[in-house]
Image (cartoon, rainbow, N blue to C red; front, side, top):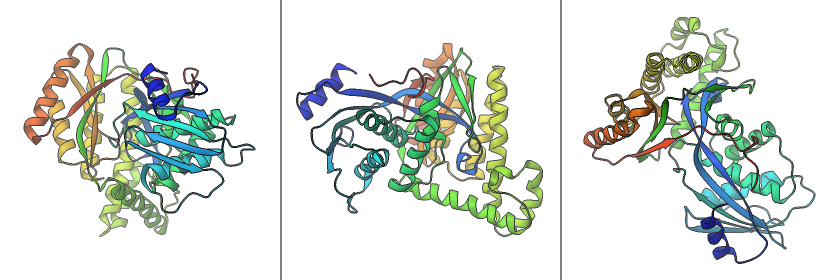
Length: 390
């Protein structure tokens, strides 16, 4: 752990037994947006921006969680039920801890400190990283063994229950099981993961618009419901499917007629179908370092997310436009749930600085806003051999 984290922990919680710590990476989804909860394909990578969690056991059965980002501390006792009056990060933190401790023979109290250099709410999975960090520390201090797939499912359920977002399982799997220098091709139905090397002469750059629209959570839930309604609609027509993963490109013309006046369901379906195909094509483009192909796939993905899924926004569109006009750009598109947040970009490594400068300048001219560039590397997940408690 860093000296800064240790000093801050002791400042807040006092001297005592040496604490343990873990740094949980965020993730950027290269392509495959809004496909995970439709049993589809995604292509994320864990990146070297982190949620840091430091903790040690207490003599009693109380838990104190201090968040540096929020400037607040939450305390509770394990003997008591979770308060129905809780909300926000405190509710989520306590919920994750209690979920991990469910069924444990002996539950110990803990002092926990959470810090980060991962942008919160920018579409880089800060929520899943926060939960994974708390979960790993809690399990370690309580001598609970975790299996990666089981733990990923547990974290997903905690996010559903305590955040209220019916997310897919991409975020959890990518921050747990990614591999350094690679993207992770995840089949969200079978949970099979294949690691696809990223070309060594491509830089991975995240451009943060600095915008966080409040409608992101509600619209995300709406999109998930619309996808579920599309499945119901197409089932009624005699099409056998359990999710939009089961729709092929060849089905689209017939399904458009079935949707009729319910065209929004068709558009949501068309995005998912086309995005799944783009993921598989992107894998081949990475394997062959095909700049033209990956660029075209990113363009099509962003366009589909705007036209068919309607989750881009003015700021995301302008950031992507600025990127495409910047030197060295290989590919650019929005990443994450949408309605603000970040874009993901592949850039020729020797022009990264010029790309960043030109993109930020172009974005500022178009929006009057100041964006932020985050050059990242693809790293291993925390349940790989490099992800042990320190």
